[in-house]
Image 1 (cartoon, each protein chain N blue to C red):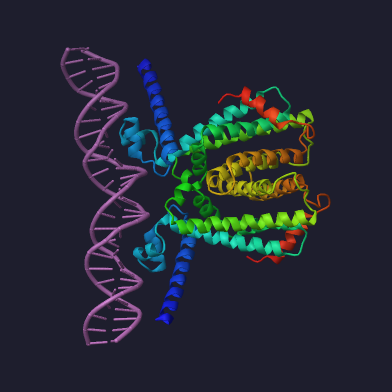
Image 2: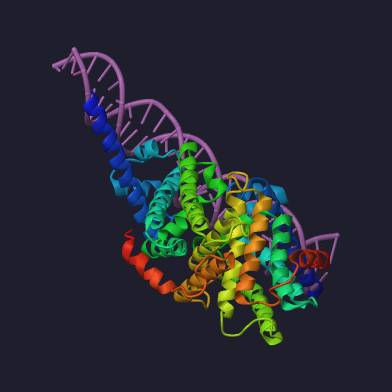
Length: 233
Length: 233
DNA sequence: ATTGATATTTGACTAATATTCAAAAAAGGA
DNA sequence: TCCTTTTTTGAATATTAGTCAAATATCAAT
């Protein structure tokens, strides 16, 4: 009865995780477009029908994968915010975490890019879409908190640039990086290492532009080392 | 013979334009995913078989649409570069042109975003893919020329930030804008007007960060008005 | 104008794959 | 052991990209 229901629920969750991680692996190997539901069914050793009890459509599955990645990111962003360091170090930590995630799971690029398109949302369930939006907001919310920490600490001059504008600028730089990596590296002249240097430099220039202290003698590399050591994916 | 061949070639081109503009309209109305080749065939009043004589796959058609948009952009970028104005005004003109294009043809967002994915390239013909890369390079090449104009005129300090890094930073801001507009406007809290303000402000902050003169008294709005008047889509 | 050759167009057909749902199997409870 | 309820299954359906043999149109030569 109750015991049974608990076990059932747990097993349901385990199976959902199995499906998601298997899908992630298949996408990593072959790309999202060549993932077929029946291949996935074979890989997890369940029937297609069972997959469709977890996910109403293939797009729904995609959004579920995005929710997983974004919530991992949200968790890490929160960890970054908690680190006992000046606010400028912590916003930079946000970038470092993004770079670490990009290194660790490149297939996330594809998944999130695809999942950020209205034609996908339309075919996903409302709950899952809302979960994704909520997770995104948890991420941007955490960055906003860091901005407020900075304002409170006097690291950031008030009134010059709005919170939303800062969020947009920093986020754009990373989106640009994702797109650059996914589209152009090893196809055009630019290499991955160059792209990483460029993203860091532009990010710092924006921080300087916002007047985010300390502007002058501040060692990006040292801060990066600190966060790489502290944050564990 | 020759006369005939000329006419044939012209008609072939006209039909290709018809197919592309019709596809663009259908995508604008319903999105790329719900564009079917047979709907398109009906709309242009030719058979599916004929469509497939112009475009080997649906992805090839998509890339062809991207080539159209990117080459329009390349043309406008070149026009901006030729305007008789200080270099800083002209890089800013690049942003203004992008905003104008975004206002005029929002469906281009979808098209270019989709077209910038390797899984699409794999299914397009090599020639069309190369045409797309070439057009992108014409765009970035023009911006690089403006950067060199700036270096030559002493508007930009040499050696601080590399050409590639500047290109990346400015381009990221606009990619971020595209993505924001397409995904989140009218779904999340931020409005289109706010997004436009944010993109302009961050773009200018980067220019300032690169040390692009004149940094101090420089009126973005006035420059925008000039380019909006001069440049005709 | 007629003809035969060549080029183009057509749309019914094939293939791939997401999604459904009736039947079968398993689990639960008496 | 048997009946009920829940879950799983995978063959069947639906959609749509892409093909190709047959039909149609074009053209140069007579």
